Image 1 (cartoon, one colour):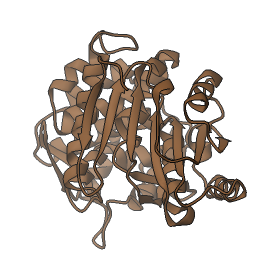
Image 2: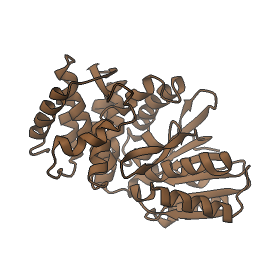
Image 3: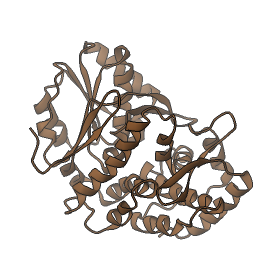
Length: 353
């Protein structure tokens, strides 16, 4: 049963599933598997964990470090060992409860434990709802870069309980909005003004509808391209620089803020290569998001991480760029342009708000 006010987004493909957006969903979660492993970050409100435990009666509940501290091979192997010790069977399930990092870890655990068990997600952050919980990209980080180890493993269902967003600090909510705004730039321009609207906030009148529409952008893309053979790469707009910022600062710059910075760099690159000037949109978002000011860094500090970006091929790095709003493409950028626009990007960010 689901509240009548909830909205549903369908993800198609070989293993279709439903994303439900509504209030009060944590306590109404049901899965058909008898044996369940619940994985959540240590900083999650205990009430969330207890609510889901009461709904699912998990065989084992595993707390992992918060945020990207959980996305390491050491944590990953420890969780696998704990599932084995709990005798979670092949017809069991892994449920990821928490933000984007915990979702990524839980999905990779589900993809690899006993060569794959059922996976469900209960994202509790805006970032997790719009991005990590949908699409089946799972994985962990390496010292050399973000998300360099992982697997495609779609969830069986996703429940986005918007009541959890009311517990987030305002800066964490604004961080997660980067992925929703990105979906406006690459696919649905109506989202741009809606994300920056005062109504888009925890408990706000447009929260569920804007969130559902932002999720729908990703759902449509991953339905057509589940394993990133083509257009799914467009969802990485802004992420080439963003992942470099995260890796170089050891995640002192959180993902959503890094994406905000990365989108502005990508907008500058797009303009430099003849695209429309969309930097007004990306600067407007940065002023709204109010990200933490960046430390002193150079292009050469970040370039090694960008060079290892997952969109790179045998001919080098490729960036997601925009001809115009909702017209993304993959392109190569000459190094002199990358360096020049990086310098201009830094100038734009002094101060960034």
